[in-house]
Image 1 (cartoon, helix red, strand yellow):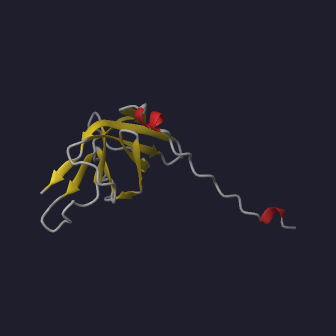
Image 2 (cartoon, one colour):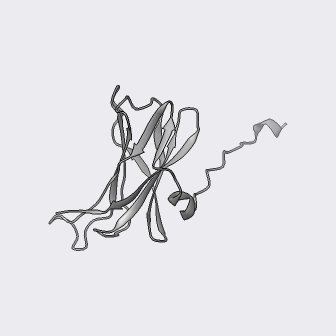
Image 3 (cartoon, one colour):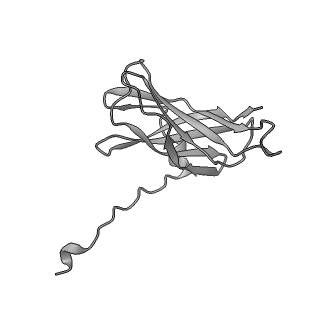
Length: 148
């Protein structure tokens, strides 16, 4: 009687290795559009911040390369920032719905490590389509900016 009642949870995707993250392409084609990651990575050192600054934040902008509309149903599902042999696995927050016709989708990751500023990192996202397919997308050599 209990055979049909057991739950069957879906296993989470495995965390990619540093080598896999660094090998991710800098453009991907999804839903007929070529996409590029254009992140803005920074740490806040404004006067109201702690003396050693606030934790790293990154705005993850994914844009179509030709300026056409961002594909419906594509989202950033996971994100990683790599510095040397260190990896920050981040929780992704969607900041705004993709506006119809806009070439840009935007998400935010917060509460990162206190790396930098002024050091280069690789930013990698996992894009997921509405049918569940995934692709890694990388923006190499992004400088962690400092806000004052």
